[in-house]
Image (cartoon, rainbow, N blue to C red):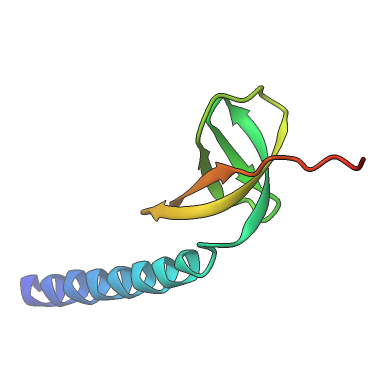
Length: 88
């Protein structure tokens, strides 16, 4: 019985590790892209696709900030604000 539980735990860990690799690869694909982020805290918000994003600088809660994804840390993307270009 102990052997079966050990095997189950090992297979569970193997599955979780694989899921993390796939998720990391998907998040890495966002690096370099431009996203709109709804700010939930002064430097944290979510994209339209509900991805967690830390945004450099302090922003108003509820503000939508356009960013370029610069990096990722585990499940959180790191965004740099992109200046708004206003028509002349």
